[in-house]
Picture 1 (cartoon, rainbow, N blue to C red):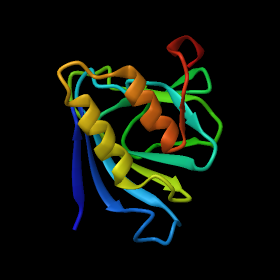
Picture 2: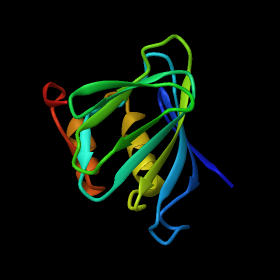
Picture 3: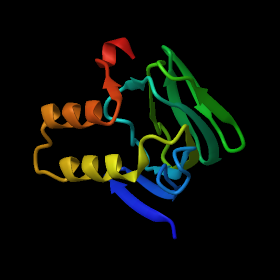
Picture 4: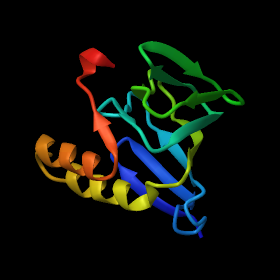
Length: 143
């Protein structure tokens, strides 16, 4: 059964995780509400990401350039490349995300959801959590 994790303007529905695929991949659907975004641009050295647009439009910032993702289009993010995303439209957008190999799993997102639910999220704790799971945050000026 798919598991849904709410992160404010982002909802993730996991289909497969590293645990179910023996580390082969993580696969989840992500819905981004209007004006939703990845709060912290980052990169990772242990996996690649492939994003497939399902509905609406998201804009991905990949290696310093913006890429609009419409339904039926893909974005490939090689490990080591700084990236982030947002939904600049007035409608929700969704995409299928595949991380290969699967090294992240849903627990990272659950941990971040807990931190984001605090009245005032602690940036130091968010950074520590990201680093613990292999995501390296970068200042927005470097994204």
